Image (cartoon, rainbow, N blue to C red; front, side, top):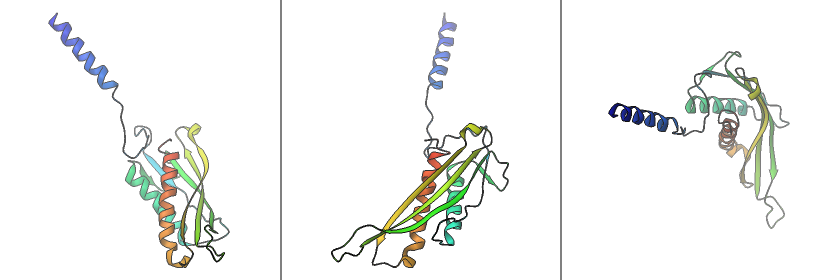
Length: 170
């Protein structure tokens, strides 16, 4: 009888442990026993208005985020387990708030990217999707004075959106 109680206690402990959900702080839902590597293609600017540093800023932001929030190894080989490639499709300015003098008091900078997320281990999870993000700034400021900071902020927002839609599987 004592042996049976011990066995039942062990089975109960195993059953309880198996039911404990696992959470990650970054929202990644990656099975690291299957996925070990990721690669990135270039993200050329195809927008009508071109800000040359944007491509490098976006690519670095994406690579840094994946490196910091996952255990995936970033490689330069297109035969990686996962791959992201695409293009920057939108870079535009639009007036937002109009002041008393009928001039815009706020301007919006919008950046859009098209991402092709390729899952070489499970092609059914491959996605082709467009994302965009924006920041408003005062029209009294010159774009050249705030452009770098706005691009950094928007690229971070885009990287979050892309991460959640692909590796976060939201």
